[in-house]
Length: 462
Image (cartoon, rainbow, N blue to C red):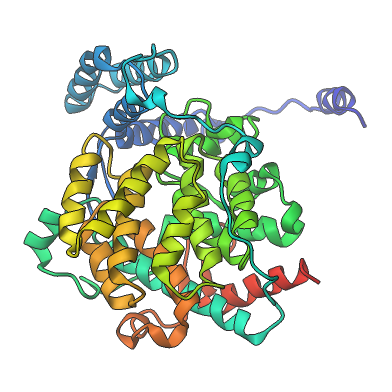
């Protein structure tokens, strides 16, 4: 039956009814109003669920467009008007102002003086592939018992590190030290709720279905099927996909957060399913990243995917960092940030000296942007030098988006050094439980997630 025929059939067979007041559905509009007002208020003022850190997405959106080389000074007056409307709880005016702000963000003029335009913006995999450098290795044996053990260690490491970082994300090194001193362990009883891993599981679900031929559109379908909501770039991408906008446009259109950390925070899974094959990990990361990001945001996921893939075949974490930096095109702005950080690591013995330089370099960027967090990863991996506890200490004290950073780099350490390298002080409080807010997988076992990953990889390497 064609669509017009079905619609015609429905109309022709509709029998009139008389609804009483309780049966009428107009009152649902009150709930719709409350939902839209609540989500709008969160756009202007919110606190991170895990750590309570303050965030203003409206301000951050303007900040992000400034970072990407656009003129934004004329939007300050609009931001001030929005804050005033928020303070007086004037929702009609706040709705108007927010709509006006988003329209303006989509038609900003370039700032021709911005350093951003000095670098190449990579828009396609082919363009990136031509400039990237990858070390090649003999084929990794995914049928070996060692592979299953490494995957399990990687997931355990990621989950405990995410639990560590969730409680302290969104703060500076200085504020964290004032509050907690030197962080060497969980600052509170840990839990495994984390938005980062939900998107990795969605990728795994798509990969399980399609293997290495998985497309960005298949990944996007798993997003809307499994993930009810996101934050910043991911939430915009979800809205775009639900509105019929497919990748890569879903990662770019109406998305001022497209170079934030949202893709970078999920690169590990691409490295896990492409062990010892950094180029393939990068290719999969590209497919995943463009669902919600563009430009340097995509390169961020590639960076993390590459170092996790390398952890299967390299035993020197500093060598892994160097190779991961080499996988980023030298004419990109992302390379400027990670390579500069690597140079500083080589020059200074104390990680705090290097981190102070990093803090100055990224001070114009939001703490959820890819750059501050990639720099934190490089510093923690370099100075932690393969030791799990030391690396977790440094990544914690660096602040920024700690859960994303700690989880990604811990995955590489777990894979490289094995389950025995992770002290029981990290694992005992977590056990084998994983809680998510995915639609149909709210309760999982870490062992189940590990087994699923191994089976999916082996199935598509048979």
